[in-house]
Length: 214
Image (cartoon, rainbow, N blue to C red; front, top):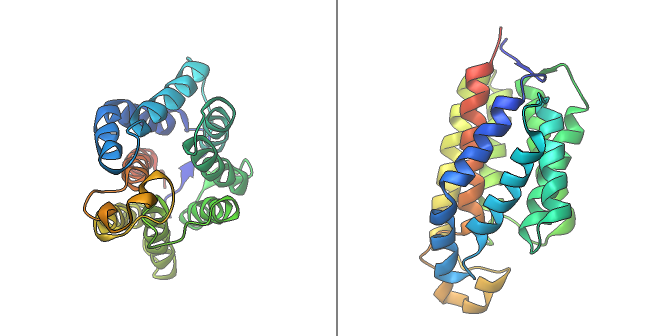
């Protein structure tokens, strides 16, 4: 059974940082359609601050998630910082410095992250937020665990589910944040948070796949 060695977190975290930096303008453009347009800028600012803080140091996956979450909560304003910060830090707490992260533990980490979000936001699936990406991604992972799939297959299934969840937000009416004021007019564009979350989960999955060991 393939596992991720927790100590090999640096490449995963830097891959997450990179995709946010690369997609800064894209995320801003999406957010500008029904929001205030600063999602890409804020995400890039927070993730780049984490990259600078990490420097040349190694990090475990769990510590990397915690440290990134801490930067987002403490140094980035708006709603994005606390939302993503909570998600990452609660994922980290569930790993509890385990030496090996199995598929089952990764599933528990995602679930802990989502449950942590539910404690601080009212958003639920169908509300046109990043929850619409995280929830189906988690369900795909949980089904993979139940079906006895290997880690790589599960991550591929998670990526498909996250992409589907992101795309699903096009047809939803926003119920939270600035875009909620538009009512039915918020239908059509993607949700910026769901989009950035999909990008992050894909980058996370891709690098974990590269690092899996038997």
